[in-house]
Structures are given as structure tokens and as C-alpha cells.
Length: 247
Image 1 (cartoon, rainbow, N blue to C red):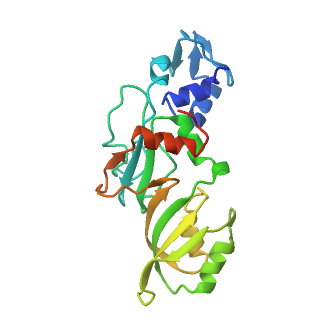
Image 2: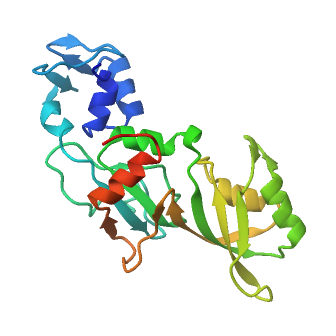
Image 3: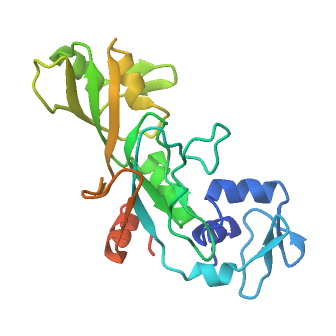
């Protein structure tokens, strides 16, 4: 059975599944000079345009999925352009013949570390989907006193303004006598600023935050901030497998 148009175009790299669905709903996608409908399928030879521009979806559909492990530095923003003129993570990525790079989730401007980039909108959607509960690992420096009771509360669960949240694990990563202590935390929720908000709920402050892992992908060593490591075909296949995607 052929995939639905939104899944096909997302896989071909013309946007995330959500972006493609929004474009179809707004009447911005046409197939053979007719307005596309959500859920319709594409057949070989179908002419597709997005915002009046024809896209070679058949050429792109068979191009292997690419994934970058990008090392974001503080002050970069995860957006294609910024009205304040700040540096964006998309500025120095490899050029593509078709499609575009898609960021998997976001890191706020003050958070550094691992950001996955892919050319496959369906892979992006699944990696972000809460049903897969992929672990996100962070190194976090805390200013303030942290005791075992606080750690237990953060693992058991804390009521935030948008519902319960918790760390799957919290590990002390340095000397407990330091004024600013490092911890390694794992969370399986992609909610906005959830790591910072969990610590803030306990009356302590996050002074530095760096993502060091996303699912099976670690922050690459030997890569400077603002640069990236491209996953091998084997690594991409393993990443896709954890979200039940065959590529």
C-alpha cells in the first residue's frame, strides 16, 4: 500500500510531517494541478507542487536518509533565521540538492550539546513522538544545595504547570563539596525546558546545561562546538530501528 502524501513528502525531506500536513490543510500543496487532500497517496509520475514550486519527490524518495549529530554551542538558536541576528544551527550545515535539514526537537539558546539533524521528516516525527520515550541525557551544573531527598523527589515526580514530570535517573558527577555541582540526568520527555523547570521546582538554579545523548546517539567526541559528525549508514539504520522505521 502506498504511503500517504504527507508521509511521502516528509520522508523526501520537504518538511516535517506536521509542516506538510499544515501546508496541505492550507491548500498550498497541489497534485496534478489539483489541490491535495490529507491522506491521499502519490503514484509514479504524479506532479507535485508546494507553494507553486514543483518538487521532484520521486528523485528524493530514494535518496538515503542522512543524520547529523550537531554540537550546538550556547547563543546559537534552533531556527532558520533570527530577527535579532543571532547565529543559527542551520548556517553551516552540508548543502543538499533537494529537501532540507530538519532539527529533531529543540535546545533553547542557553543550552549546548547534542542536536540531531535529519533529511527525513518521518524519522524526525518518530524521534520526537512521546510514545517512543527515547532517553535524553544531560550534564547539568546546579547552583544551590542538593540532597538525597531532593533527588528522590525529582525521580519520583514533580507537579509542574503542565503536568507531572520526572527524571528517570539523577547521578552526581563531581565533588559534593563544590558550590556548583555537576549532575547527569536522564529524561524521557521532550517537553519545553523540562530539565530546567524540574530543578527550579526544588529552589535551585541551573547554571549550565548540555545535552550529551539522544536515544542511542551520544554527543560526538572530537567535534568542536558549532560543528557536527555525520552518522554512518549503519548508525542511521540503528537509530531508525529504535522508532520502528525501516529505511
